[in-house]
Amino acid sequence: MSGLTLTIQAERWREHLATTFARAAVVPVVKGNGYGFGRERLAAEAERLGADVLAVGTASEVGSVREAISGDVVVLTPWRADDLDAVALATDPKVITTVSREVDLAALSAGGERAPRVLLELRTSMRRYGMELAEAGSAVGRLDARDAAAGQPGVVLEGWTIHLPLLERGRLEEARRLSRAAVALRRAPIWISHVTPEEATTLAAELGVDVRLRLGTSLWLGDPGALRTTATVIDVHRVARGERIGYRQRRVSRDGWVLVLAGGTAHGVGLEAPSAASTLRSRAISAATGGLEAAGRALSPYTVAGRKRWFLEPPHMQSSMVLLPGEEHAPSVGDAVPVQLRLTTAVVDHVAEA
Image (cartoon, rainbow, N blue to C red):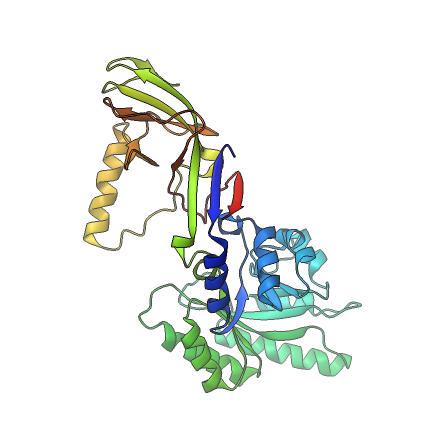
């Protein structure tokens, strides 16, 4: 197969999935690019695991997974009245909507033929979405008053949702504090991200309610040894030092081979999430890398003859040019070479099982 290929060692990968899934009450997350595999494929794997619910990022992603599963779909991005997909799906019996503001809860509970199923999101130290505890208490009071007046629920509360930062320090303590406060307001399941399966199980025992653990990266990409990404060699050319090449006609610094390889910006090659640069070492690496890129030099993710090779210019839309210097043996057209991809941002041409 030509292009970029993600090859899965299927037996090993599925063993990791099953082991991870069994460690807690897991809700598989299949949002965005489907962690490099595609949302449809991961939804089918979630069904194979026996998941009763899975999570997507946005309401627009629901349609890509709902036919592959028999259970429910929870939308992680909070509901907004100007999101037409979210509005249309709010009363779908298979969809669970996240609500992060009292004003949105009021709109959803205003009445209709079917009561929306909702999760109420609490604000954490992430400071992204969610209600402070005072607002959450007001929201629960509003629901109680509305339900008593109408004689039927305006929404069906499926639980509380808590999205924690990645840092381990203080994470479990914050999860405990918010979970206890939520359960005190209304006894309901806790849906949580970024704690370990063991921590989720501990919380469930302490609180006496179900704790649903959302897992994405650690589930699908938790055994990197089961995954391999390769790129097809599209063309090979001899080049001499000083010759100009590419869109920008830069001079080649050494004799060698120009390799045209599958994968470009459309695949996520050369793109990466910004680094947090939280330590002096990481900041120094970031500064050094930035200086090389400013000077027109960037190390590619492609490995040829045992080493990462330099880009000759920034990746093109669907291919990249790298330099194999000296007299090293060049690969042939049609060969496959390893390429290191961040699968949370990559789009591959083929997914194969081995």
